[in-house]
Image (cartoon, rainbow, N blue to C red; front, top):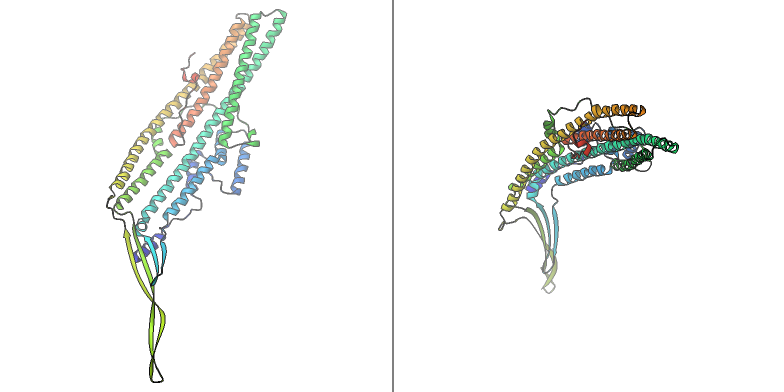
Length: 482
C-alpha cells in the first residue's frame, strides 16, 4: 500500500489545472495572424456588451469583407459554441490528469463474533500509467485548440463568400435598374411616336418587349439579392435593427496582377489546419498504442489496505473467599477486541485474452491514421493546385471582360446609336445591341464575383477552414470571344 501512496503523491504534483484563458490565447494568436482579426470568446455579460458595441460600430459604415469577418467572429453563435467545445475539452483534460479515486468499503458482520472490516482499494496500474494518460489528454486538448482555429477560419471563409455574393447580387440589381430606366424611356417614346403614326406597330412592340424582358430580369435579380443578403445575415448572426446595414454598390476592383503560384503547395502543407489536426491525432494514437502495449497483459492491478476488528464475547471467572471459609465463583462477561491489519492484491488473469486483440486493434488504428495522413497531405497539395488554377482562370476571365469585352461593347453601342440617329440602321439593330450590352455587363459582374470567390477559396485551400469548389457561372466558364 505504501507504493500506491507514494505513486499518488508523485502524480498529484503533476495534475493539470484550468488555464485562465481556457485555451483561447493560442486560438486568438493563430487566427489573428491569418485573418488579421483574433478570435474572441464571449464568456460573460461584459464581453457580450463589448461585442455588441463593436458590431454596432462596424454596421454603422458601409460593410466591407473584413468588417463582415469581424462581425461573424463576434456574433456567430455556432462559432461561440465551438469555443465552448474547447472549454469542454479542457475540463476533460483536467479530469483525465487526476489519479483514480480510491475505493473505501466497510463490512459489518454479526454472529457468534462481531467483525468490522475496513478496506481502502487503489487501482495501482491506473495510477502508474497516469503520467502517460495525462500526456495523451494534453495532446487531445491541443488538438481541440486546432479544431477551434479551424472552426474560426471556416466561419471567416463563409462570411467572405456570402459578402461577395451579396454585393454581386446588389450590383446586378443596380445595373438592371439603370437599364430598365433607359428601356422605360424608350418604350414611352415609342408609344408616343406610335400614337402620331411615326413608328410602326412592329417597332413599338419590340420596344415594349425589351422593357418587359428587362423588368423580368430585374425581378429575378431582386429576388436573388434578398436571398444572398439573408445568407449573409445568417453567417453574421444579425437580426432586428441590425439588418439595416449598407452594402457597397460595386464589387472591389481586380488586383493589378494575380498572385504567383511558386509557394502555393508549400504554404498549404505547412499552414493547413486540418493537416495539423491529422498530425496531432496520429501523435495521440501513437502514444495510446504504446500505452496499450505496456498494459497488454494486465488490465487491472488493485492494491487494498485491510483493517479488521474482531469483537468476541468472553467470560472472566473470579473466585473469592467467603466467610465459612467458602470459595465463591463469579463470572463477568466482557467484549474482547482483536485488531488485524494486512493488504490484498488483486489482478485479472488473462486466461482467454493475452492482450493480442487489444494490441492488434491499436496497431491497425495507428497504421490506418498513418495512411490517412499521407493521403490527406497529397490531397492538400492537390487542393492548393486546383484552387490556384480556379483563381488564375477566374482572374484572366474577369480581366478579359474588364479590359476587352466591356470597352468593345461600349464602342459598339456608341456607333450603333450614331448610326440609328443618322438613320443608317433601324431600331432592331439598336435593340439587339442593347440586349448584347446588358448580357455582357451581367457576365462581367458574374466573372468578377467568381474571381473574388476563387480568391477566398485559394486562401482557404492554403490555411484551412473549408476550401470549397467554386462552380463558375455558365458565362464565365466559356472562353471569352469578341
